Length: 416
Image (cartoon, rainbow, N blue to C red):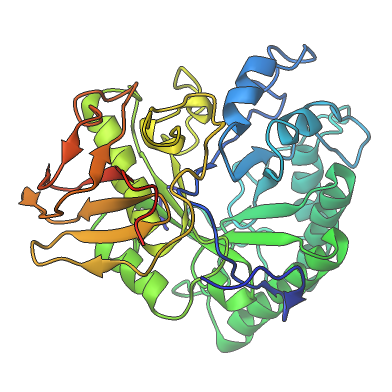
């Protein structure tokens, strides 16, 4: 929502939290969505899947989110064909059904048509049937998760979607067990919200089975033993968002790092390959590489932006091996940097650097340009979207603009 914000691989789940594992970088995701009738993933309501869009959306990505409707519904109306097609675009791609669990966009007075058997209608009816509207709450917090009947009924709907979609994970937005409301919050109520949301998480894990991933976006979601939380609006210096560079560094360096922690950037972007957009995407992706997070770039789930942001693809997402080192728009060389060769370290210039098996990332979080002394052995990638920055040249002392990053290839094939 706009308002708020190297270990061995293990197959098992411990205490409900996926054990961290060594990842290949960069880790690219899509904070995607669709309208309740399926557009833009399908060409028109009840029409065929947009196979080109699905392929572009999944290629080179580690995770994507989609809406639950119309792909599954407790009323039987569903399109079971599209999500498997998306999941098949890349081996191991995690397709996470997305749902907004605390805020609800339909007014309590709204009455769905009797013929509407879709998931949003079922969700709305469940809130109303259990008297689950939170009277007096500020806009954006209409669902009363302190009410046991409401919480359990909504949890059952989400578990049904997980089973019906055979999902490997789920993204819950705005999962906010620690939100406090003046004039409404009491210790007993706040405790009930936390207990009900913890029960939701436990039920979802049971429904999803071993290895099921839960990502929560909201105040206090990290207290629910989820596998990842999201920080939105990067880079934003507003303290309540926790999305400044320093806040992200503290978030990932404070012992709370999870395998599927997620950084979202690109708020308000309309022209994806304008120079400022390429720089913003590069800065977000570089920051994610420093600390290990998933990174998505797009205009906050704005489905009216064309081309659909789920298809945006930047030079740094996929790069062919040295010596060609060319941006690859097919996604065939995702994870091209390889695994980290050490932790991120701060340089004397104020920039940060992290080395990987086949390259390095430089990040300048300051408000002024900085020059980094590297020495021999480094080369810029050959770009498609931003040829001015990614010109394929050898570099010894590159200068980075304020809030920018630079992805480099090691000429030796390893940067260890």
